[in-house]
Image 1: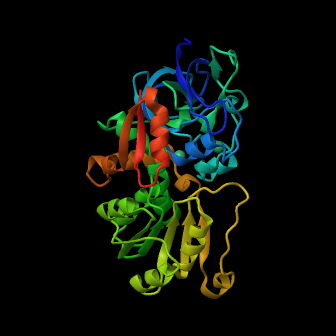
Image 2: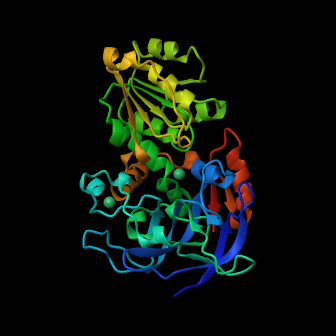
Length: 369
Ligand SMILES: [Zn+2]
Ligand SMILES: [Zn+2]
């Protein structure tokens, strides 16, 4: 069944999105069609829309979503999560094949297996001068649309009574922040932890850090609003970035942080974060810069102080495993999703949602369908 619905299409860099009637191919083996309830706006979407990150156009972006399954292709293998029409699901850009070397090593977020969805967009424009064109399936999801066609591995069931409006947040930012701490770092109880950048990812580093019972849980952000929320969510200290910050952090932590999480795509933040580490400390970078950007560190610190820098793609997350953990934590009152959510916008006002997301100090804008 191939139905017609609305998608917000990017036709040119840095132009408002255009609501257009589109259709999707029916789901094939290993695929699922989801009618969306909500999609949050992530900074990756904004970078593609502005043209700062290169992408084919026209395109449909959006990748942090939740909704209800309306149609299913066959399961690829018996280890796939069992899904049914009517299931409420989180939809993510994380796609895994379960069989490649990365998946076999349990490094699912590094799975690079191409599927037919990568080879040919399942979307098709139905009107205007681009009629018949297949807009690019942005971030492997194209969730600024009433429906998405994705791989079954890109969805996971919502096992608790959580509304899609909040569940969508689990598709990218929450997962990445949680995973940076719980999968990439796994700090021991009583550690000294610091997070640079308290947006949709960093606030979740702070929340995950709190669960590990740290001695210090430092939040760094330029925005006073974000620093305040970080303190509400478990930060013990909050600072604005400044050249003197590494010295302040070393004083607050008696020698430096065990782990620094960099949740902003900013190379100055990475240099700053490295200087905040104790000897033997580790900086985990989840913030995404543009391709080709470099940052400098005092190289002598690697061999003389045993500091490490570790990158983490989406917090080394496994969508099925980590969303289940997060849903359980939320149900037990141990994970705050409500405080992460900003203004809600009807789909017709998606360009307003994008504008609000561009201004500093705002929480995650959520588009409702
Ligand atoms: Zn994202
Ligand atoms: Zn794989």
